Image 1 (cartoon, rainbow, N blue to C red):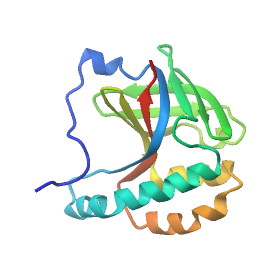
Image 2: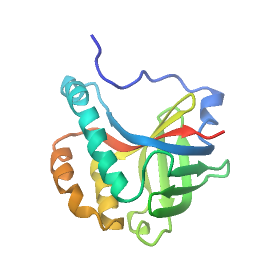
Image 3: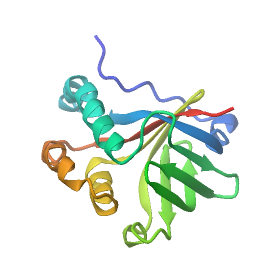
Image 4: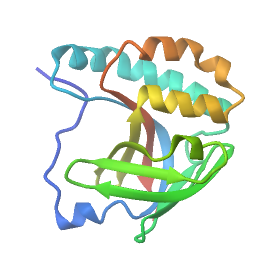
Length: 173
């Protein structure tokens, strides 16, 4: 009986603490429900694939398709990202034990949000970079002319607590 599509959390090691720095190539939308609630698990099973499909369509409208975007985290707490039409630079912090990642940028359309906290899950050469669904949709709507395509997804996602959405990446060589 599988409880959810969420992989088990591993204890961080010295290697996992240093696993985030590097360049990662966008591969697909990321969707993850958190919490021990059985409703969240059922919701994860029923909605993850559908949400990922919808997010993929939205991301494609702003030019983000597999292989076209990337994010680089350096060892001095800086990051740079090319996600569709947007180029973003800023600072980050990452706690491997809690998976909490915080990003901040002076990008003209993003600085109003200050520091945005989310989750970074690393498993080998795969990274999921996720933030609370309502926050990501708010940000995407403010930086994109495609906000009308988000209306239906926004209404659906507003009903789910502990839902994180974002991006899945694979490590570049």
